[in-house]
Amino acid sequence: ECIVVAMEPSESCTILCGEIGKHLIEGIADGFIPGIIARHRDILDDVCHIESDVSIEEMRRLGREHGIFVGPSSGAHLLAAKMLKEKHGVENVVTFFCDEGEKYINDYWL
Image (cartoon, rainbow, N blue to C red; front, top):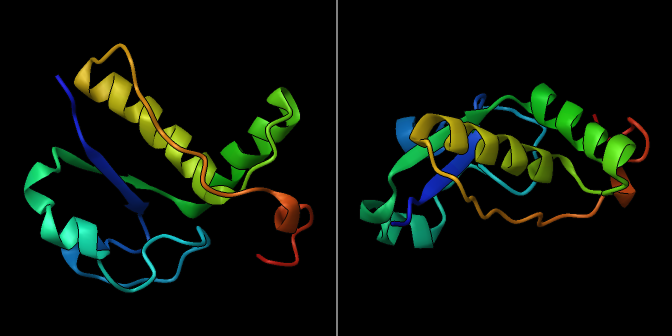
């Protein structure tokens, strides 16, 4: 069995609500629904919402505790994967870390 879950910032509920909001998770929920999701919405089993500040905390935790240097969208992806595992009771979860953390070293981007 495979469960397909989309993730978007809580502050910009684009997929479920059609609302565009300001958030700090670059590269997702940029004011439009990506074509692949628009065309294949029927395969989504769930949409997970992650707050920007929580994704940033997770991004920093990954660097501090595991030496994994990523951006906030990767922090959000990991949190969504953890939520999916808990909510759906699945044992194995696959997610992607799609950004690197170089530009997030300091807080100028916040």
